[in-house]
Length: 290
Picture 1: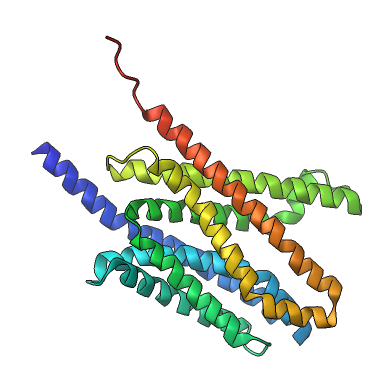
Picture 2 (picture 1 turned 90 degrees about the vertical axis):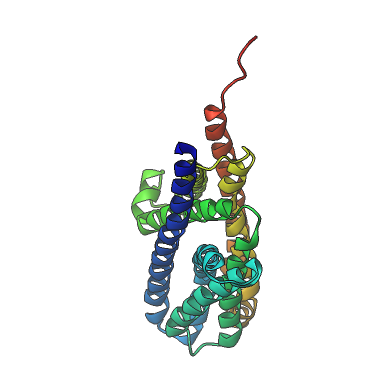
């Protein structure tokens, strides 16, 4: 009787928790869209609007793919469709919301339909990940990704104070070094946080899962970050070309963001997987000696 009760409890727990993850992911998306609006709406010219849109697009896509994946998990459990279709539908709904929020800020610049389509497709792709066999791993990965992204937002908000803490002496050289140290530290801590949150989520489900699923969940945040980075690169291609026609310097700034974002995603991926693997390893019992 106790075994049946524990299985039912674990099932109910697993059904409730995706709702929480969806809610938190949507809050993160809303904050990202609000930040995007605050940045773009105050642009003094169409050129600056296009430049800022190209810079902030990857952040919007990351929040969209995380919320889309969470919504996809929820949709798979609610819609009587094939998992990939139900997940993509749930993710697409989030993608359309993100698209509408972005268009409020960026609606009169060039390549608007292209950017809007990329955002909607990103949400659908995120939702389609819910079709994976172990959907709980996707949910845990999204939870870790939301936590890691939130940490990045906090670091960005306090960036001016943090670069001083990391050695900025108000010169070009020290400012660049301090920014580099801050970025590396933020990436490592984001990966560690993603691994811890993903591990804690899987443990609290009460499910007996093979140990490799834990590092997979820890790495999921980094994987989604890299996918969003790739989609962001594709999404801002026409914007960057337009910026380049006016200013090669500003275009190079946009281009330089891609390697930084890839490095961040890779660090989050490996740090998250490593931390989750270490944590699950500490819970495994050694075989008794005969």
